[in-house]
Image (cartoon, rainbow, N blue to C red; front, side, top):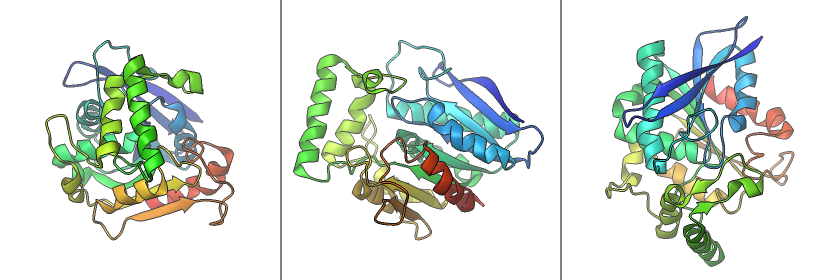
Length: 281
């Protein structure tokens, strides 16, 4: 039977995050998987594949960003970098030092993969812990694939600045995001750079992550994580064992997935979750 248990973890900057343990108490092989979501989201985007893998004997750990899902509310501003350098780090530290996990595979959706990447670059002591990684719809600096997309991102940035918030709930998402949170993503894609708030350039340091990465992208995801952007992000790791999987009807898949359905949908469960399982194994 699949069990869900909530652990509340403190971060080094005094925030608290939710870390969900998903496990089949009658079929636990002792192998662990770390999952996390992206902006506007929470554990629900990861829960389907986590339960699928738990039924196969994996212990899955879903981290919810601060101010998302079951993580306590905070009035402090935070960015992608905050999530990577504090929230993801706190989760990995807890799993390694408190739970005793020696090896773990990672599955992320969208910005969750960006945050994991930043965490591992700035905290190389965790690199040896990571077995394999699967990104769903993940890119940081390649969304402006045309002049139209460039100006759409510029327009989204200034509209979000005007409103102070990007209203995700009006589009059916669980959460809104503030301008402060979204500004990094807009700037990375407008400037085609991947730099931290202090000017640190993550892009040339991505090659330090040697764990094999499977990047899954979708034809219907043309604005947030287009194929060209996902390919550019994956290429920056400079690892020939990495693989890009592009999902479209033309390429033999069941649908032209969009940004959310690529990870959570009946079709994804049927044809993509088993691919991730095989990649991990």
